[in-house]
Amino acid sequence: MAEACVIVGANMAGASAAETLRRSGYAGAITLLGAEPELPYERPPLSKEWLRGSTPTAKLHPRDAAFYAEQRITLRTGTRAVALDTARQVLTLEDGSTLPWDHLVLATGTVPRTLNIPGADLPGIHLLRTLADGRAIQAELQAGRRLVVIGAGFIGAEMAASARSMGLTVTVLEVLPVPLRRVLGDELGQIYADLHRAHGVDMRLGTGVAAFMGDDRVTAVLTDQGERIACDLVVVGVGVRPATDWLADSGVALENGVLTDQYCATNIPGVVAAGDVANWWHPLYGTRMRLEHFDNALKQGAAAARTLLGQREEYVPIPYFWSDQYDVHMQYLGYAATWDRIIYRGDVVGYDGSVWYMRGDVPQAALLLNRQREMVTARRLLAARAAVDSTGLADPNHDLRTLLA
Image 1 (cartoon, rainbow, N blue to C red):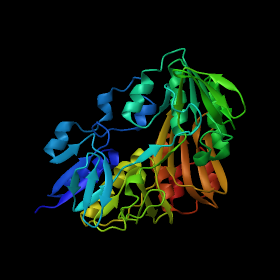
Image 2: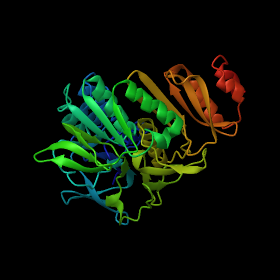
Image 3: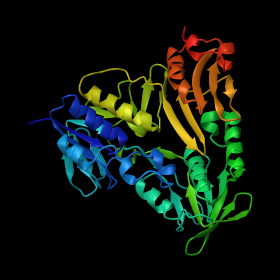
Image 4: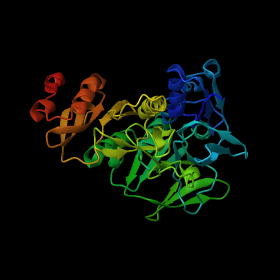
């Protein structure tokens, strides 16, 4: 009997794995399971250009249904896996049916965290993770309405920027002292706070939520400081968690996601993981990481597929993501859980420069603000993992390429 590969997660990581397997010569059956009733699609535009109506829904799908048929990839949308038997190599689906596999890719992504407070189930309170979530929010984004965004991470910040550009009144509530603090730190987070305030967002920092108020739908948010903020709708963006509940009794090693080695392989032979759900060992940085970024989903899906094909290569990318807020295009490269100093290059306050997170004289990560032209060199500098001339790095007139020596 021919081999069969099942991929759980019809997202960018899962789709990338399926395409890589087929194009690299995998002759067996490939089944791509998706819990959503959608073709695999790109999530980043959901809080940006798609939400604002400048990108049609069709452009969210890199491949159409015909592509999967041509590649002999069986795409089963609206199909959720609920249990995994690794001994028998069988998946159990939500409808009670089972699906055998010889090779398995776990790419179930993440699920949004929710707020367990009074009124959290009122209509008009939204999460933004899926295309269906986006459609529900989009239908309510009308100029002049009052939006409260809970959480100033990337989803919340991008949501606020999009809504302001559409003419809504926007209030952001964030428990931390600055937005985007966990990734960018206090100094850069403050720059983003200033950016939103300059565009008319009421940015309330160090402020949590005690309850949602309303009868038939949400009409106000009660803060933990006792203030009542009237609203017409709410978007909650307080982070996500790996979608691994269904794997709890499977024997697959779990810790902040699915644990894998540097080849994307799990502790179960024939089982790999990729995308937001994978917590893998990164040899270049000497640590485990789990990335919730589009770029990683594409690359790791392909890397996991190559491992199943016996093409074992260490997965050692320079992490990368981007964010568009108003007229500021931000690109972040590298990985900096900690740093001991920051080097500024160019006019960072004016959103035309770069920021380098350093450990000693070795760059760990770089944040580029409207500096797309520096991205390739920045990636090479970070990959070198070597000390650089800090004076030259800080000088906007100094060619970054000379630091590669």
